[in-house]
Image (cartoon, rainbow, N blue to C red; front, side, top):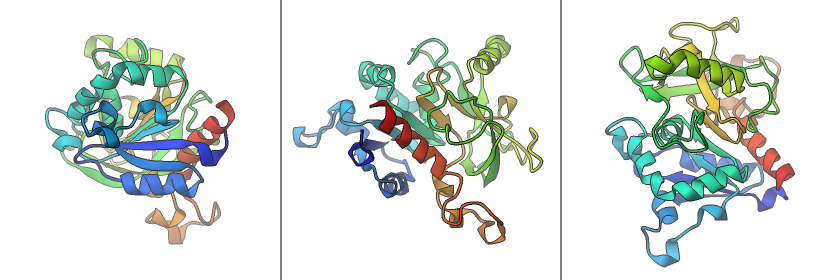
Length: 277
């Protein structure tokens, strides 16, 4: 598939954010990207506004505070997505990529699309993203070390062990598993190569606060499903798409003079679709 033919849907509801820049960055890289409201996919709009999930080759659920993050972060958005469950499962099984960033990661977890240990979309969430240990919103650049060995389609241009900078901006980023299954779940995620990024300190080692801004289990900042085409990341890659979006960009030496680390995530999904379809 030619890159210009790749259709990207950035799916929003009330309270989402970063959808405009996400669309702009996919377009910047040559894809045909657009914003689409979830109601357009569920059919809760006039006929002329309706869209089909199959209209798209890549789906992105952006950050924000969807539906005010009432009940739990991402829970209401995920509940509304359940109307599309069979279509979403078909989308995932077809190998098409889905990315959720920050609030979008929370939505994927609440919808049962991650961790995805019990299938492509479980009826009951297998994890939760809870309130940060500090009890408040945390916003800062975060260092993430790539743990994935190559299964995640979004990170294949990066090398295992590479450290990247994305921007944390969340109040509920603490990934937790059921206590009675925590050890088993964590072991399965490691064995399945589903842990994509972990928070690290400036020496590349797992670190405590503020390096780990939420206190998340095992320092997990990003997960994918077993097939690697569903990817959730808590810090924002789009906020480091260009080099100048990093707060320390004037002090950086070497590296890409134009782009930041976040570009790799967008490029990775597009390169995968180009080759697969």
